[in-house]
Length: 162
Image (cartoon, rainbow, N blue to C red):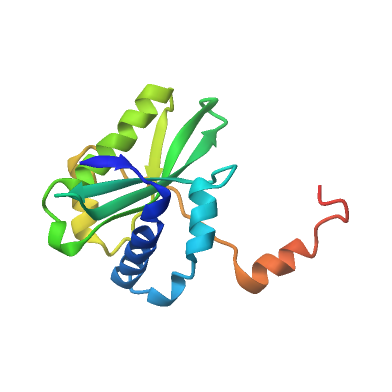
């Protein structure tokens, strides 16, 4: 069963984020707190949204996503930040069900793109994504600015912030 996340799901979502970070070999990178996640998902202006996969009423996976925008198509899209299914529930169709639910959101809302990133060493997941018709964007490279480099660039911004 796939359902929208509720505020009471925040602790289990946060736990699964930690499990995902450990799987991706960077457990120290998962620093979000329950209050941050609750505000991001359920505050007055949500920045992100989440779906929960359940098996026999127990949360076994989640998808956390946000809207993006394409200037080329003039429409919003969905960017899947995290997709995770707990090891004991893998192979049960939960990951595909979460992706299908997000695809349904895209179609229902007229969004033309559904995108996400995957680590290049994660061959089982890449194979799964290919099996549902997803195509890698090999010609694109993701860039990220954090820490000192982020602050250094911010310091060069004009005083009015524009």
